[in-house]
Image 1 (cartoon, rainbow, N blue to C red):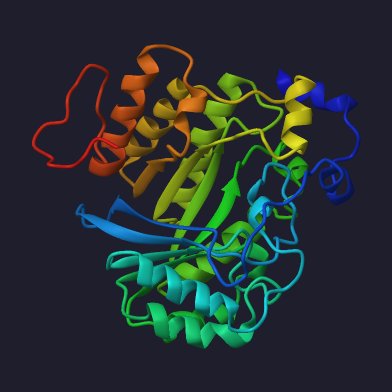
Image 2 (cartoon, rainbow, N blue to C red):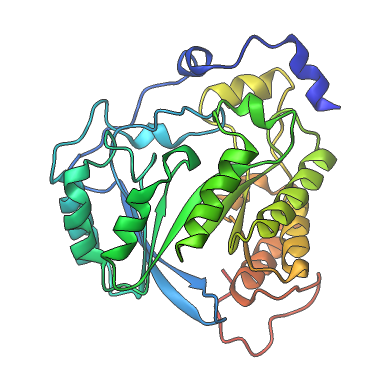
Length: 322
């Protein structure tokens, strides 16, 4: 098994990961590093637009092994008001959308990433959206989530990285989180009427292709067992320095699109909640001529939340293929 190859590695910690990072991209603290509209299937089955804003802020302090979001971060804490200006700018640039994602390369309730003084002003900008989706590490989930939810007109949803329930691999990701931490945070949020979205890695480091798919499936099942409402399966990527070294040393290989489709189909078959497969730069995982068709088919399943077998065409959905 690939995980056996991890025995010869040095201890994977902050120092090891930071030593392998390259330079950050140039960013403007008064502008999001990206913003876009993405249609997404909602809990009622309708397809509605989501304004997704990638906030520029200080990097996450947890420094997970597989993370590459630090590339778009600032060296230090952004000034009070900067994140507010970023969101105001993005909403002005994008067409109106009923839902908004505030993704932040870190944690929404980390005061070094988003100043606490900005939270109420952010709520004024997004409070009328049906859903406000933020990202946060389970260790930072507390009453601040409830207070923020209470000043929104719509519903708050918190996206948290579950990554994998593989007991060998999870501790090696430097996430500094246990499954108990995750379950505590998820049940606390759900108990307060706040939605939970789980990010799940497909083929984490030290997993073979078959292990990666098996653990992704088990992770989806576990997330639904603790009442998570939505799971997003993310193919694990190289490109952050640390993962490139693991790739070169044979400790990691990117997953196949066939496995991504299989994980999505399994999740949808459970009929416990929404399941999405992340198709960002999916072409980099393509290994066969069939993968072009597979990407389109996965996109249709993301929209319809219905299983579609190879060779089938979308019928009557009126939804774009990707």
